[in-house]
Amino acid sequence: MTRLDRLPPQALVIACDARKALFLTNAGTAFAPSLETREVLEADDNPPTREQGTDRPGRMPDHTAAGGGTGPRSAMEATDLHALAEDRFAAAVAARLAERHRREPVGALVIAAPSRFLGELRRHLDPALLPVVLAEFPKDLTKHPVPEILEAIFRH
Image (cartoon, rainbow, N blue to C red; front, side, top):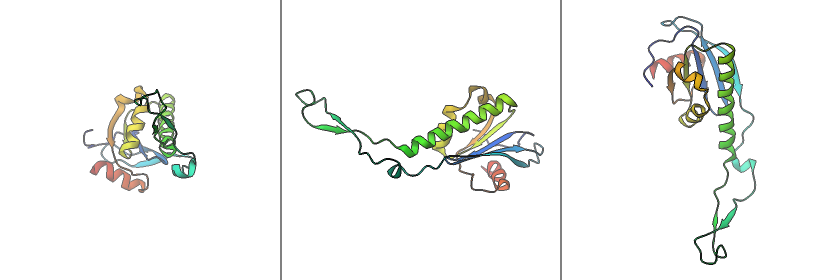
């Protein structure tokens, strides 16, 4: 998206990653913004896939072999349980954002998230929010203090 040169009053800024989402509001003016934390969502514990599942990937008959499946068998890709949990958290963040928008319409929205998470969040975003998205930043800013998040979105 385009470079951000101002942030409207009461604009909502979401800084999120696969474990945490910060909902921030501009309590200042468009040209002298001041972010305040309104809400923090945290994902449930999401250990690596190797710690979540112990089953080996399944195998299926290779249908290209003569005899209709009596020959070699192909391995199936293992399910990435860690990635599935991250995707569920993206859906939960999008649902929370939609709920906030229904309760109190969002006039402007800025989203900062790592690329993969941003793509997943976009996939779940309520279509009513699409017109109010001012900017998207493919960066993980959740570990930064709030003033640095503000600096980062204007510097990007």
